[in-house]
Image 1 (tube, helix red, strand yellow):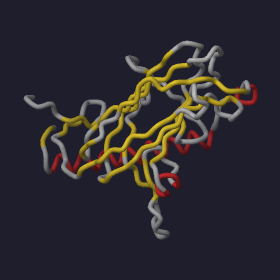
Image 2 (cartoon, rainbow, N blue to C red; image 1 turned 30 degrees about the vertical axis):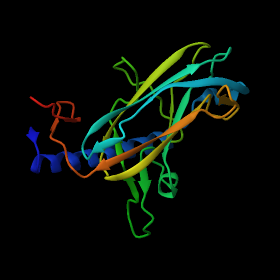
Image 3 (spheres, rainbow, N blue to C red; image 1 turned 180 degrees about the vertical axis):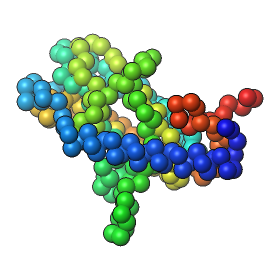
Length: 223
């Protein structure tokens, strides 16, 4: 199940199909639940947070799967109530989209205007070195919640993303201390922690294969 050409086109279509399946599942979760029931009791005030690691490849190919890694430290003296990370692609199309890693096509006649740029692999995000999902769903599909983070502790999260739309994109991320807005994450300089990745996805398809779990991976050279 490896090769270029016909299989690569199949892999690309499968990635897009997987993205829309994930979109439908996320929409269902949003309709059935929303944010956690503890939001009303969220403590108020600022919580000092530092981004210690931020990695995502600056060049990618269609069908390529890459890891986005963030390391976050609670550098304050109180337990952070609920560490959350939100994503959006810069620009109006990204801001208007309800996908964290997608854009919205403004053409009014489209039945499905949402266009994934990256498709998030199933069971991700995860805390690094863990095989279990590590980011709970929230009322916003762009936001992932990781729960409390004790004072002085650092956590690392990984998102596994498959590129399905060519172009140059700036992916923005923001770190927060809770879901209700009462708890506010701030850096030592008093600004909201976050950053961006500028990545170019080329239309050159890599040699790929589909694993037993249905994940599209790039074939290692020499295999």
